Each structure stands twice: as structure tokens, then as C-alpha cells.
Length: 521
Ligand code: MAN
Image 1 (cartoon, rainbow, N blue to C red):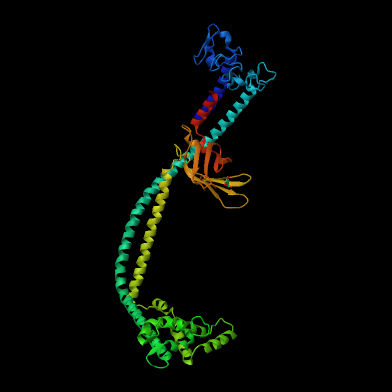
Image 2 (tube, rainbow, N blue to C red; image 1 turned 180 degrees about the vertical axis):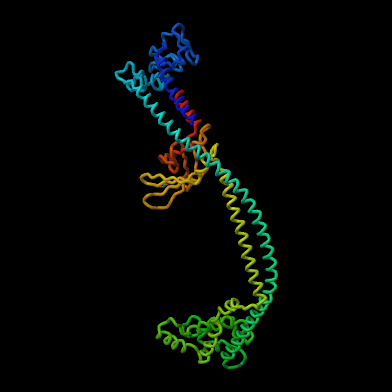
């Protein structure tokens, strides 16, 4: 507090001293456009040597409106040299250096009007007024800094507290993690142990199920074979123990292209491209080819529940005629009962009833698996907390942790087209006001201020890719202010955004001093 008051006074003193020096300066005789610090280089008693040492000329050549020195140092008060420098004293305000080409160009560049001494332009001397304004502004800024730095002190306190809490939290979590991992290992061992027993008990049921499946498979095979044999006998009208082309040609089911007649090729197809087949060949070659067609035919006979009532009758009539005998109808009905009930297997597995002992083991194993996955989840949760804290602890929140408590604070700014949101140390986004989704303008990258001013610029990078361009990024320039607020947002280059942010965290005394020093010197 005391320090700040002293600082305000020092700064004002500097301004006043400066005004005083400016007054004194104006009294020291020297050529026009020369600063006090360079006055000794212009001695009317001696010849003048150009600053770059390129030549020495009689002193009367200085400001004679003719450029003699390459560096323009002989014409500080005229526009004769293209590279000369004119110095305005600006008593009451800040001195200023302008290119000497602006001397007498009809534009007032210096607040004391000294740059327009022989043009027709009449320049008002408003240095006093500017000085007063500058002093008022300096006082205003100092007041902001004063209040801001009090707030900043609180932020520092909060930031440090947060950091130490985080460190404590981390230590605790590391401990918790060890315990959780121990528990997880225990639960895993229990689970494995009980699963061995569970597997042994279930093996009996699995083996039985496998056996059942095999039995069913064999039954299927036998049924299929029986069906094949019956078909063979039915189709073998001359009962010579062999099926010939002619015998198949009277079977509509063999009319593959449904053109009303069974051609030689069609019959040969079902005979495995032979003229005739015996029962064995029929079972191995013809039956697999024929069965899908028989099934198709049967399928056509099956009335469908969803169809309108009249339709199945028509179809049945027509296809009934197409099929060769009544027996086939019976067969089709028989087969529908068996072949169509496919889901039985699955349901059977689900409805297995285990003996009491096995069921107990299954329940215990299920419980052990649940306990293990809970223990696993706890370890995972602790891990992600540890990672989040470590990430935070690694972040640079300023030399005194003044920015730490601002991590995650989101600030919005609205312009004509977009709503911008900056979540400090997280990410920057842009949302079009006329709808549309949010566009990422970058995630927290690093501090990017120049040397000595590192914490005055934040960089958010790797935002959403710009069409045909780089990924979006945002530079945040930070200045002292009484609240954390975005003052402006611009996009100086396509997809490269610039935000001006004020925050008490930036009200550091060192920089007031430096800024003042910048202004003064
Ligand atoms: C969007 C916005 C703009 C950006 C263009 C680039 O409209 O993100 O800020 O300039 O895309 O195509």
C-alpha cells in the first residue's frame, strides 16, 4: 500500500521533472531540431563533423537547407536531408523525434509547433494541455493499478492456496491410488480363484450342451437323409433304384426357370450333370441341389398370417396344382413344424437351470467380477484425477501464481456477428449469432509475451482448421484492469484472432514502473 502511494508520487514527480527539464532544455542554445543530449556535438566555435564521421563542414553549413552529411546530421532543423531527425522539445509534454522531412510540410507534428516555423501553417502550442491530460491519464492508470494490484494480491494468495491444496490433493490421491491398486489386485485374485471353480462347474453343463448339440446335429442329418430317401423313392416311378432324366422331367419342382416344362438341362442339373443317379449319388449330389427348390415350393404353400385372406387361397390353389401330389402337401406341413423353429437352441441355453451348488458358484463369481470391475473403476478414476492435477500443476500461472485461480474462468464478448468465449488456460471459441455450431479458436498453448513482458500475451493454438488454411489460433493481449474482461476481439489475419483482455492479475507494480519509464525516456 505504502509502496503504491510512493509509486504514484514518484511517477507524477517524473512527469513534473520532465516538464521542468523540457523548460530548461528550451533555454539551452543549440541549432534548431537538436536535442539537449546532442547539443554538445553542435559547437558554433568549431567545424561540424557529421555523426557518421563521413565529413567535416564549416559550422555555418549546419541547417543551411543543404544536405552535406550522408546521415542527415547537418540538417536537423530543415527538410533538406531525407534521413535527418528533427527533435521537438514539446515543453510541458513529451519530447518527440520526427523525420526532418516533415519540417515545414504544412502539418503540425509537434505539440509546440516548432516543426512548422516557416510554413504558412499556424500551429497551436497545446503541449501544456496534452501534458495535463497525460498527467490525468497517468493518475487514472495509477489509480486502476492501485486498486487492481490490491485485487491482484488477493489473486496471488488464492492462487498459492489453490496450488498448495492441489499438491496436498495429489499426495493424498497417490496414497489412495496405492490402496486402490492393492484392493484391485485382491479382487482380481478372488475373481480368478472363484472363476476357476465356476468354470469347472460350468464345464459339466457346457459338455452336456455340446453333446446335445451333436445329438441334434446327428438327428438333423438323419432326418435329412430320410427325407432324401423318401423323395428318391417317390421320384423313382419305375422303381429301378435309379433316377433318370425322364423321371425328373415330370416333377414341376425341377422346372428351375418356371416356364412350364422341365428341360433336359434342368433335369441333368439335378442329376449332377449325369443321365441318372442311384440312391447314394442322389443323397450326396442331387438332394443338396433339389432341397432348396422343394423348400421354396413348400414355402409357397404356407399361408402367411399377414396376407389378406383371399390371397393365400389363390396361391395355394395355383401352386398346389403345380406340385405333384398330395403327399408333398403333408410333408410340407410336417416339415414346417420342425425346420421353422430355429430360435429354440438359443432359448434353450438361456433357460438352463443349474444345480444349487453351480448356481451359487455363478452368483459368487458374478459378484467377484462386479467387485473387481468396481475396484478397477476406482483406480481409473483416481488416475484421471491425478492426471488433471498434474496438468494443472505443470501450467505456468505467472511468477507469483497470480493467474492460477483464473484457470477455467470463462469470459464472453459479443460483436456484430459472433459471441466469443475465452475460458482462461482452457480454450477460446466463436459462436455465430445467426445459429451454427461453436468453432474452436484454439486451446491453451503458452505465454508468448516478449522478453520481460512474457505474462502480457497468451497464445491459444490448434483450433478448428481454417478452410484451405492453418488451424485457428488466438493471441490474447493482457493489461491491468479492475475486472477480468474482454475489451475487444479482432481477426487481423484470416483465422488468427486477437483479444484484448483486462484483468487485475496483470496489475503488477514492476510493470507500472517500467511503463512509466518507457513514457518518460
Ligand atoms: C468462419 C469464422 C471466421 C473465419 C472464417 C474463415 O466464418 O470462423 O472468423 O474468418 O470462418 O473461413
